[in-house]
Image (cartoon, rainbow, N blue to C red):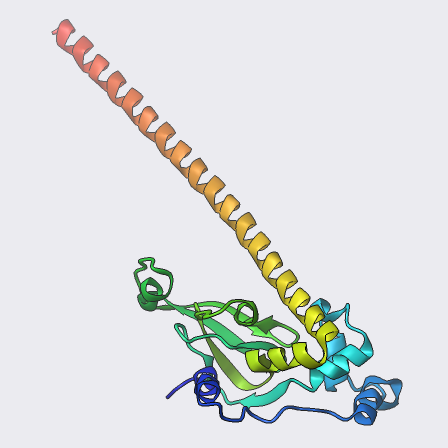
Amino acid sequence: MSSYESDINEKIKGNASLPEKMDVSVIKYFWQAGPFTGKRRDTVPKFLRSIEVLKNFSDNELRILTKYLHMRIFENGEEVFEQGDLGVGFYFIYSGHVDVIVDHNKADQVNEEQFLGDSKLVLSLERFDYFGELALLQDHSIRNATVIARESCVLLGIFKPDVEELINYYPITAAKLLQSVSVIIATRLHSLTRETRLLKYKVTQLEKEKEEWFECRKKDKDKEKEKDREVEKEK
């Protein structure tokens, strides 16, 4: 069974219509965004306003962005995209959660690196998290992990053709979206760099401890040999 994103890719290649966009009316959007909805926090406007990387958007710019979002309900175990798929979408988790899984047997095909072992759960993402952002900036972006919906999961997604249309009609909103995506990528890269440095430090420490252990073992063996020689002399 193909993933959701691979089906989207087929539609894009065949110039077929993409799934219907949300396209919330102006009155409905601002009604849901305002205080008239009471304590309800599950409206799309309030959801988008709660996402940190969209904090530089005005209310009207978030409304415009909503016009280009696709809402999709995923069943438990359904694949959003599969490792090795061509990436075309960026997703916000509106409800539920997803698992990010890496298949080490496919890693050599995707990253030209050799790994051993089977699939591994890397992390779980939940409401207000987002993923897939690299696909909007990078041509021919290949997914380096599989994302699977858990329980009933609702995602808001935007695809490359949507962004291109957004650029044509609302360039300022599009620029802010791409800026937000760039911030996400930069933040993830910084985190990865920090983790790599920490890992390198730990490896260096382990190598140092290993050398010290071998040195101690060598000294112990030398002492044992010296004792053996003294015993031989006494005989």
